[in-house]
Image (cartoon, one colour):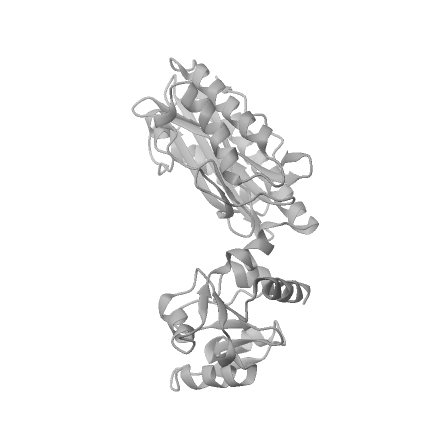
Length: 360
């Protein structure tokens, strides 16, 4: 497989002898295989020459239909130790001195590997699999773009239908139904009206939309193994006092981050550019989260765009830019776009403007 060979090249560059993955995003991206994960150790090992699975017998037949990677099977009656030892011997894993452990792996499963390689240097996947996943190819870009268009339609549908007197949950239902019409699986629908919007991860509930409510709408769904993530604002009737000023400040913060986003720039530079706009306007304490996150097979993945991030942005990385201002008891305001880094700067995947959307 092409991705396995590319990974081996990266392993050689980074001096990594062994990569061990569990069921999850890394394994799905690398192999296309997404086996069931439970308390039974199911591990995929990659070395410079070999690759194969430590495989519970319960999962073996299903995985065997998907791949010709060797399976080192074990049953509940036997336990995994014998199959793991056989894998170690067959792949010469005992000689590994530098290993990568999937950061999403259960600690007890990681212990099975680390206990046998006590002298090996251990790291996580950021410099190998993470680095490869962060740079999207054209097929991945096309899927992310399609998902962004699906989210645009769901957001627009919600604006067309939502009205004074609806609940947050009713608005969320409009979004979710629209996603399903596009064969996308709803992942999250944060609808925060009025003071609820001042909580960035508000749990959508029975709050009724009232005259003058600013409504945070953060939505996303998945299709073809990738997802969408977009935040826009709606206002029910007349905007509350100060809203238009704050909206303009957050929009200026988005534009400031976009202006400095270039290949070779550290992620923290974008966060700093947006934060300076908001802090300079007197709202610094009300912007309490990082500027953004990478997106791909997971909604949140590297690179993370924060004040402390040393990640260097590169061409074809995909990430969010989403500054916000949250005024307790009044309203919250966040504007989010997913972008892909091009040679001359970020390309926004969404086509929806970030303007104030007035619901009459």
